[in-house]
Image 1: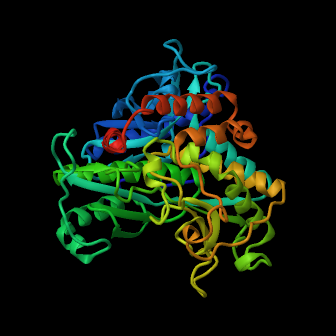
Image 2: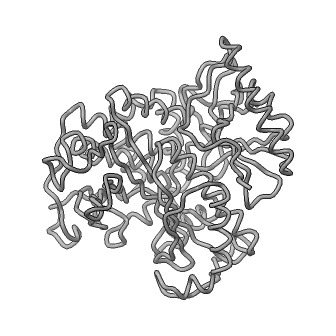
Length: 473
């Protein structure tokens, strides 16, 4: 039996609470039907999630029989979560912060899913609104929706997907170094044999939740794996990332495993990436193929990617947001530490993937490799769209391609991306593109969190940084 109550659809902004009583009634009616079905399937509670500016998924839960009321009126959540740091300490910002105020979480019923690895539970992502029904300016999911709408006004559609990398360790005290359940070689079948029951259960859970898995494979670092899912709408891709990570963690617990999505699990090992794949479409045409630009890019696709590439130093504030991210973002680890692009170049931050000849129009895409799993996926995707659209408006063109390892070239020949969060903060402060797209309240809340985490870990050793992030993500 399918675990998805409503078929996955492109995420839509929830209606406001204050004026449209008919819309509120429609949400309640949909939720009433869904809740009855969930209850008949043994579901007791529904998780409503959002992701904060530190990249942590926060949650409120409601009994399934409360879902109808929640869909109509929301459930309360404090706005101060927008200025929580990774260790749950709290900073503040000019527009958002302090103990006063309340928001309403409105579930997206189109993504309501019974959780295959958590019996008795369902999940839905939530949009956040003020008490009067107006959109909360700090809502990261609605920011991504606005950027999708901005692309739509140009007649453009973006399809996206985020690769999920993770490390599993045997369950034990969190303060102890990780002990890995398999010692097979990188990318080796040995690891799949060792972990075949776990990976089988993971594939089954993802399939029951109607997620289209493209592949699962062992990765480079000890205990590390990766899963890729099919591309979808940008907000849908961010929702799916949250669901995939939650499912991986839940399946791991059933096998006595602890899961880490941290950018650096150990200070000297390859970390967990969160590579973002994007393709630009106009109607049924993939603009990454059939054009006169590099490797068949159309002019719009080239300008879009050139805009993203130009903005990468500032985008790292959203895509590599942790001080621990810069333990991962180093040359010659396929992390994309250089601000350059190349055809199928895994050392370039922007990897162009034209796809195999004859596979079809859907295969051409670009991969941004410099991002990691500490990112809020809604912020990351929304900001990448904003940068790409700014590139189209400015008619940017890509710089000269770097076809090989940029680290092998003369120093300074290819720009290196910032090597610390402090450098990234300076780039973010200077970005007019991101400030305009995010709006001051969200832009400044993100800045406050980045500055707060820089100060929190300013005197930490690499070992301390990795340990602080290891089990938070």
